[in-house]
Image 1 (cartoon, rainbow, N blue to C red):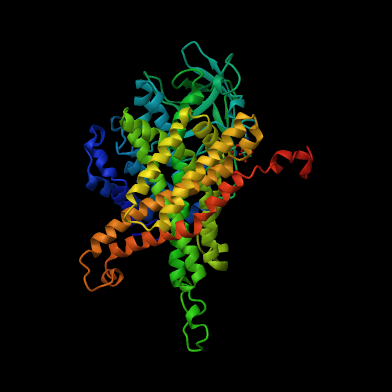
Image 2: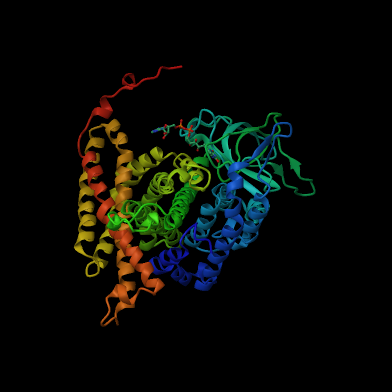
Length: 621
Ligand SMILES: Cc1cc2nc3c(=O)[nH]c(=O)nc-3n(C[C@H](O)[C@H](O)[C@H](O)COP(=O)(O)OP(=O)(O)OC[C@H]3O[C@@H](n4cnc5c(N)ncnc54)[C@H](O)[C@@H]3O)c2cc1C
């Protein structure tokens, strides 16, 4: 359909050939679905994304959202509305949401794959849907039956939007510093008073109402995160018990002018300027952060997914461009004056960039869908399998969020490089992808905060290092599967890396035990990068196992032919061959970087600890 967004063949390969997501139908919860339903849903997502989202992507960037100061309203680009409605009407806000409230009730892994189409087609428009889905999920997990009935059908149908309101001027990464107040009223509701900044989708015209999830502190509650509660604060209070809908006392006082995602409104919201902003407690008082954290797993997965989607679209555009841009001669024809000019894809350096982009994009796709499937399995089982899936998800969440989004920045930059000067201009959307993907390393907990979460909570402080033990066990299982199928050249680096990981963790433990917190925290990001690299290597080894088996099945009866010769018109065989080449390239040329990061982690370099603020320029203002 649209060859510029993502490789649909790869989506099917990862979902069904690697992860067997359709086998989740053996569980009661998914027994109503089958492979065909998933295929139809994916196809519909692709159709709407390619035909209605991709065409509005440039307008979203150029026109952007507009703020009307007099009315305090935000207008989205005209073309956004029909596209958004088409996606919402087809059920894509709540692919994995509860069917009792209007969701499609499919596994998260299918939801993630559907949403990859929309994210790669128009990132800014998809943001509204992702936020609404996340806000709805919060209501589903912690709301009363009445709250679920009131809000969920409207949110999941796209009639109402949703937001997450955490950030304030003095509370960015330091969420515990939130100053927004919640004052209890006699009827059980609360009056909300405060200012939130950077709120995505805080005000817009894509929906009739917007349901804000607001972190605030009930008067008298303790400082820090343990005193925070979560509130449902509707823009318009819905009609109930004979009362008419009522505009709540909250306004948008401005929008940000950003580097990218211009089609997404990023708003400053003022709650209760007239002392009349009504909010309703969601879940338990003082459990707001804990509730948010439970939901953050899914939200961070979706941010990682956005990273994958931007990288994928950038890669697909680069591959198409490189096949069509004619420039220079093939290296083998340099001395031939008669030689014709060649498409740039034939230049080894361009092919190198493409293979690198392909290998990262495909590795991230396996990681992201695998993580989603682990969350599915963890939600379905309380037994050993469920515990292991939960441990895997715990560890993979910060890796997927931080690793994918940092890689997206790298891959989108590489796409600009392949487009040459045209890539730096607005002739192609790749410069837009680069500008837009950068925000992903900042929202939902910066990548620095993700790395600290990974190293401290998920590894060093994790009881008996259960998460890491399960991770290593799963990697070893893949090494066993690779035994007869994959050359030692690609297995040994992964095997060695696992051993090196033990050294690194033991070293960091020692530093922690000796109270050298600055050294430990200072190494969180390099540790995250090393583990992400190991994850990518693992995903590629696993891919080699599956793709090699598939390719062997197709070439078994190839007497008298070389496999390549026999399969030259077999699109599946070409696909598997491409998969194997990408994995060989990754393990052979990118994966050695793991060893150098591990070496640096073990180096005991203390410059970071010795460097105090005085060695840097800049003065306090
Ligand atoms: C386009 C956009 C959309 C957004 N959407 C939303 C939204 O919908 N809802 C919402 O609530 N917020 C939203 N945000 C806010 C976003 O979540 C914050 O910007 C983010 O949490 C970082 O906070 P900050 O900007 O105050 O940076 P700071 O917290 O000041 O961080 C600055 C730097 O210091 C580092 N740092 C800070 N504290 C620590 C620490 N303890 N240890 C190590 N490093 C640290 C950070 O990693 C970062 O590199 C959005 C922001 C933008 C730009």
